[in-house]
Length: 144
Image (cartoon, rainbow, N blue to C red; front, side, top):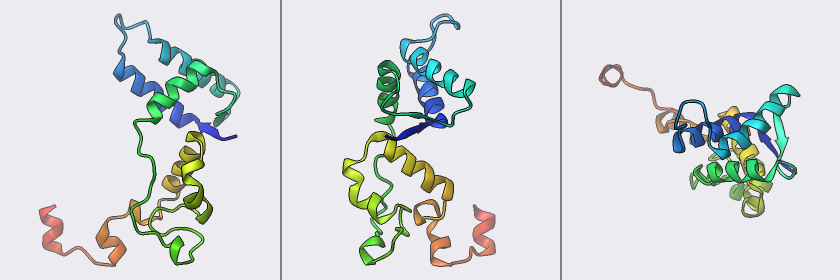
């Protein structure tokens, strides 16, 4: 069972609010209402994650619609796990995460995305010159 982080619930709410704006400034679409109930309970109980499997069906469906708009795999085609690393230098996933990505649930994938994003050390989060150890020239800095 994977936990869906509160920030993903917030992102899904905001996505639905843009996709289906309130007609009168007060009423929310059914998807926002379903997600908002889950969000409110998480805040009330001070929970950072909700269980993907026990999430109410309408909220889960609304979350999955948002999830479908997010990138699937963090892979940047530089896989160091194939060279024996426990954690890929390219995307930041562990060997097991890389191997089992296709059978992971959406919640498990989002947990992995959150972890590697928060860590921020994988090459996918750095510019090429930083990875290559190149310094930016003073003229290039002024031009940027």
